[in-house]
Length: 181
Image (cartoon, rainbow, N blue to C red; front, top):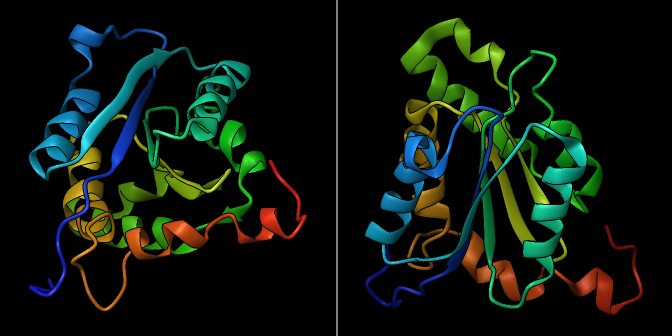
């Protein structure tokens, strides 16, 4: 962490993808809210949607188009069952895919749960100049992703580089007439 830089709070939306949970029962979403607010960030919005591609896409697209949302974090729907469709919903929308996020997530997860990490399809990318991360639905996976990846990368003070410092440049291709999601 650089003592030369000041913390910049971000506005983060949290989406839980589940057919069975309510906000009151949503331990993973609550954990993410607790972690991000504890770090000094703001909750832009929080919702639950069913494991449905159009519903997931609509919620995430809406947030990514809002000026007051810097980051979207989803939890749930990253496994292999028939209802797990979060990667199918989000990856076609990515303008830039973040393969390193998945790789680092699996490395950290492997240290905790061994080869069972192979059952997650955690992913990340950029949609409309907004960082989007899809995490598994377990509180442990959300804790690991936040504590070991997102907390540092969403902190402007983290060196040698972080997501916050490149946020103003995420839409350069759009300003030059490039494709949009």
